Every structure is written in structure tokens, then in C-alpha cells.
Amino acid sequence: MSGLLKKLPTKLPAKLPAKISDVLNPQTDTSNSKIKPVNNQFTKLLSVTKYLPAGARSTILSKAFGKVVPYVGTTGVYYETVEPNKVVVSLNNSKAVQNHIGSIHAVAVTLLAETATGFILGLNLPSDRVLLIKSYSVNFYRPLRKGQVAAIATLSNEQRLDILNTPKGEMVIPCVINDRESDRERDPIIVEMTWAWIPKSELEARRQGKNHKETVKAVAKDTPETEQKNQPANKTSAVDNDQ
Image (cartoon, rainbow, N blue to C red; front, side, top):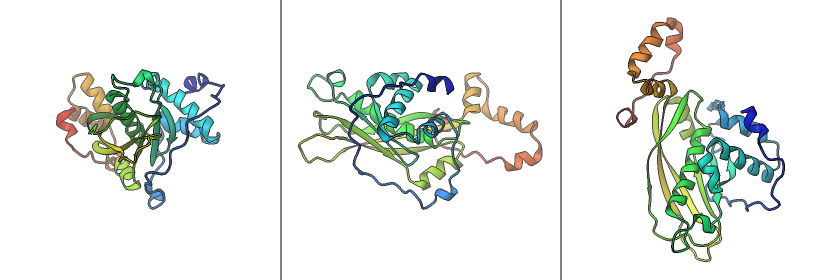
């Protein structure tokens, strides 16, 4: 993380994208007292930049997250709002991301939705777990032809608590996508992304061709009984069979 921060740009662009209007309003205070702070590479970066002006903070986060996920960084995705309850990312509808009819390419729209939903889950996921995309559903019922395109993903505090308290699970995270400068009154495109998460220990066991249950038993055998009682019970989900 320290190496990443050293590589961040010191010069900021003169113009920054306009901020998103409050399209979605997730819960903010009803259960915050029950939500424990999550400590991972994303939240560490947020804590370092939280006292910066909004525009400078967004620019630095965009550069930094672009280094964390290089493929996303090459597309020009801009991180406008990055909070545990709400993530807003945008993409300029330039020639580089357009299809043969001048509309933003379907792959670019999907990437924008995946970025928004993946990062909001990542902000709420303890560092001992890893997230995995399972599936997504999007209906391209209209082209996105004009101006900047924005994707908004939100989580309620109830959903955040569920993520925090479930060592292994999955969740459908909806994402609203709209072209901000369109001159027509149209409904936004809704993308539904299904994300799963599993313990990192299980992923490592799979990479080594080991049975995760055997790994858990081996760890439990070396763990004092008092510590075992305090360990959260794993929940099973569809990810057991699909991952």
C-alpha cells in the first residue's frame, strides 16, 4: 500500500467530471453503531485521502484504484464517490469506448457496472475473504449515445451487516446506469450483478487441490477449544457448488 501511494500523481487535472445527483439514497444511520469498521486495502486508501478536497480525492482514488485493477484503469473509469453505502463511477463516452453506431459499447457498460458493484462490496468485505463475480443481468433496451455515462451502486446498512457477518455467501447488487447529458427523458438501465465471497483460506486450498473441509479440521485441531467457540460458523450457499 505504501508503494502504491508513492506512485500517486501530484498534479491534478484542471477539470473534473460533474458530481452525480442524489439518484439513490441508501440507509446511512439506522444501524451504523452495529457495523464494525472493515480494514482492507481499499478502506486504508480511503482513510489516507478522506481529508482532501472532493475533486482531488476523486482523482487520486481513480489513479490508485486503476493501479490496483490495471484493466479497469486503462478504460478511463473515474471514481466520483467511494463510500461503504454508495459508489459512483463514470466514463466519458469517447470514441475509444464506442461501438459501430456511436453508442457506448456493451462491454464498457458492463465493466462500469462491475466496477461500481465490485468496489462497494470490496469496501465492506473483511480482508480474510475474497470476492468473485458469479453472474450478471443487463437489458440494453436503449443506446447510450451522448455524453458521460455514470453507474451508481448502493448497499443498505442491513446488507452491509449481512456481508460482514457471513464468512461465505453471495448477494445480488443492483446498479443504475444513465447517460447524464441525454436530451431525452428516459429510464436508466438497471444492471444486476451477483457477487460471491469466500474465505481466502478456501481459495488457497482449492488452488492447491485440497479439500477445504479437511483444511478447516486441521486448523481446528491446532486451535484451543476456547478460541474455536468464538469462531463464526460458516454459512453455506450456492457458491459451494458453483465456485
